[in-house]
Length: 610
Image (cartoon, rainbow, N blue to C red; front, top):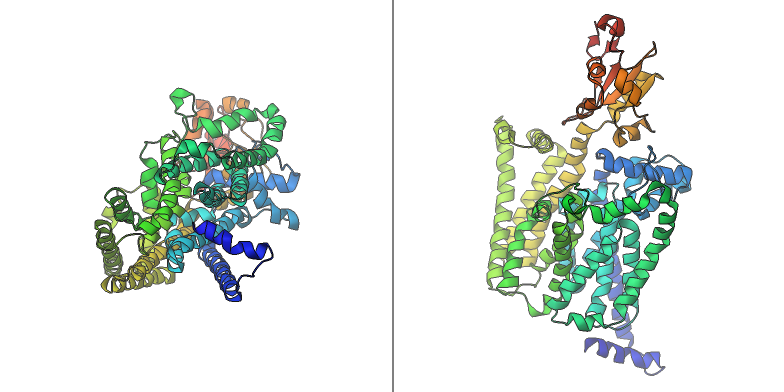
């Protein structure tokens, strides 16, 4: 009805009849201007908030290998199938690496860590702007800004805007496709929606593979019954097939040449493993990589959005018991369909990684924003649970921070509480507690923002103004997210970074023979090239001759050496990086040589080897 009214209003002007009143035109122009300004402001603010996390060192081999593929595009022009330093072909479509190559290619300089991450940062800020605009269209301007706070305030989202991986770009394209699909799914006519959705999905295929189409299709299969539409009637419409054809055509523009060019490297097998092998369990022919319990995705998603994840309770209550406002149900169903599609698909897959939760965070942020701006009817069970959770967050978070400051300033040690943490969690805890103890500026700002957010939320709850309460909760979440992504993560990543170790190795080896036990992408990145793999003959009988031979190996890799060769190794330097299985530089000596003959006068970090 609304669509027909809009078409009838526009028809006279289009046919040369009576013009649309000037006041209406000015009002529409003003609304469009405000919408553009809001989206640009959200993009700029998100960019500013997430940029500090860019200084964190690369996270192990995944990011360093991605950066190497970008290097290959820029230096050697391998745009179709980039190779890393060891000659391994990229495992995923190249859209992310193309985007990361644009600026370095134009300026003709070396690839920096920051440049390799720029596509993720720009995509993250764009997702924040899109979520703000979309939520504002459904819940008003206040709802849009609450969605922004909840999204950027989710550390699981913010940290992934600072990594050289494909997931944030894929999330942007999937979210864009789903928004473009919403109108056609609701019966809107026209070609613009399916065309835009097809382009977004096609670019998503070029970024992450066919899984983007699967996610959008699954979301549609969830959404159609929620809207009480008949899936069979939906299947008879023409636009889904046109949209799919556009997406497949865009994807095929790279996949077909890649299959042809990659035959000699068994790229087809790589494609199968990346798109099907990770999804299927090992017993059914899958790779068996990253296999985790079915509840893993849900657990990681809840943790990535804490304390906002507690708001899932009123959402579930409203869904099963009732409480959603009738006028907002369409938006709620749309967001929920995409979030559920992500959770269901990746929960069913055998391989489950932390990155897989990312596409579900924006729709959940918009869902949680809706709880505070009219999605729930007043005086329902869901509304009362929402208020109780908001009270708990608003009181508990500031009180906990103030109490922690008092405890730390009093010199009370919390070591017993950290004893059962994993090494990375213990490292984060130590950094955080040290910052609180000394009240360094970022930590003081975090504590002040948490206290301010609590006061704002309490004020809104007392005045029964839920939007203000939501803003306070959003400020608390944002303070924690910015501290984690922009301060804690860079410091913690520096404690496990191998860059300083590799620089010391270069100075020590100084042109002598250097090998790695296993191809190590992280070491190769900081070495600015591939370090040769240890030849099988050296691993079996050890080196010969007087020229020094060095080996970089991790503890678990030493089993690749013959026992006599392994016993003859001399430790030259440890990496100094925290965590287990870190590499060490060894001097290789002939197994038959005596310790004095092989190591006399060798200077190590702990003195001369006798």
